[in-house]
Image 1 (cartoon, helix red, strand yellow):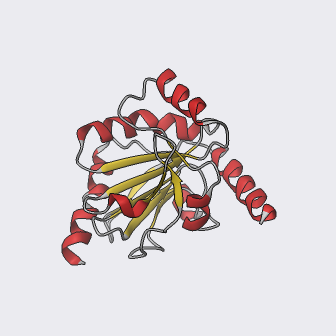
Image 2 (cartoon, rainbow, N blue to C red):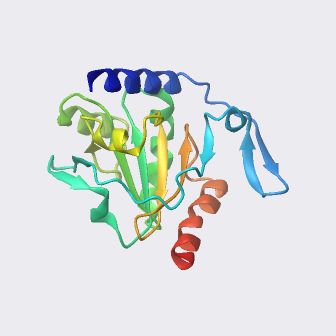
Length: 193
C-alpha cells in the first residue's frame, strides 16, 4: 500500500510541474475546446469515467469530521483536488472561490496536504479564499478512489445524482465563459439520467 501512495505522490508532483500556459483551439466537429496538453492526454477535459458513481471514500469536512461525496447529492457538485504546494492548484483557487460564491454549483476544494488541518485553514485565509471551505483528504483516500491516474489539480463535475460528468486535469479559469459552458453539462446530465 505504501508503494501505491509513493507512486501517486510522484504522479501528483509531475503534474504540478506541467506548464500552465496552453494554446486553445475549438474543434469544429465536436465544438469542444482542445489544447495541446489534451492531445498529449495530460491537461484538459476527460470523459473516460462519465456516468460513474462518486466513490464512497471518506475525507474530512471543515470541522475535521469524516464526510463522503454522497452527502452532497441533490445539486451538481464540482470537486477540486488541490494542495498548498502545487502552484497550478493555488493559481486557480481564486476562480474556484468566485464560482463557489455565485452558488450555481456546489464547490468542494479538497486539500491533499498531509499536514495538520489548521495549516490548510491558514493557507486559505492568507490567500483571501473566503467562500471555499477547508475540506482535507490527508490520507488521499478520495484521490485513491478516483483512480491511480489522478494528478493535481484535478477537478471533477458530478451531476445531482452523484454521477461523474467529466474531469478536468490541470489548472483552469473557473470564472470563464468556457467554464460556464462545461458546468452546464451537469444540468443536461440530470435531465438525460
